Amino acid sequence: MKITIPDILKKKAEGKKITMLTAYDFPFAQIVDEAGIDIILIGDSLSMVVQGNDTTIPVTMDEMVYHARLVSKAVKNAMVIGDMPFMSYQISIEDAVYNAGRFLKEGGAHAVKLEGGVSMADTIRAITKAEIPVMAHIGLTPQSVHKFGGYKVQGKDPKAAKRLLADAKAVEEAGAFAILLEAIPAPLAQRITKAVKIPTIGIGAGKYCDGNVLVLYDMLGLFNRFVPKFVKRYANLREETLKAVKQYKEDVEKGRFPAEEHSFK
Image 1: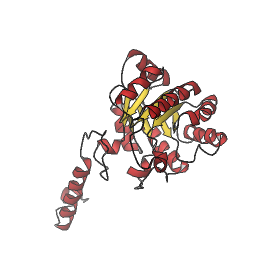
Image 2: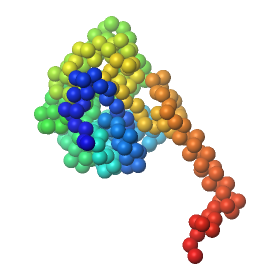
Image 3: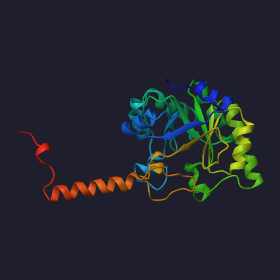
Image 4: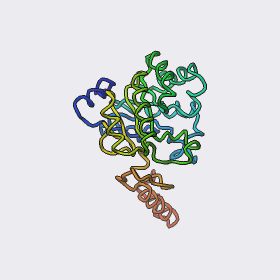
């Protein structure tokens, strides 16, 4: 059954946890959807885990829409969210609404996600006015990595915590249907979760959020340049894949593959 925004809101009301993962292509999206995950995010993290960049900044709107189209083709039940890439929504509200619309019209997504709190309230309000659902993203916002001086935990002092609480209330008031909280102390995430009526989705925000998200390639052990503290690896597919490819190489070199059963007569 297709997961909708009312379903997500109902989960918070009933105290049921919301599950969310990233996916960037048809095969993985199909697997994630079949597993029963509520929300699939085409994250701008693809800039790093798929394209090999050092930050999320280089990925373009066209590339994000392309990957959204691949994912949406595979998904039967999960809600699909397109991640607004750097400079797709910061220049003007008109650009933001247009690019958000591209995710739905061209990419087949059901909603969009964008980074920012109080400063993005007007943009969120305009996008939602255009009947495009928005998930907000506050805390560590990776597109601001240069401003933060790296990927650092946010909201650790009282002033910063107060600012994040204000961000959460601002995006809720602007019409966001959910908030992603990234890399903030668990007690602060708990405060925010209690202070807003919309669901909170944590990534490195502890156990008190209404749900959780991870980058698929992190949890499967496919991305090994660095592993954030908040990641739990559920598999080590990189090692398994490397082992399989080495076995293939050896089989070809020693004449074991292709064998008779792999050949036509």
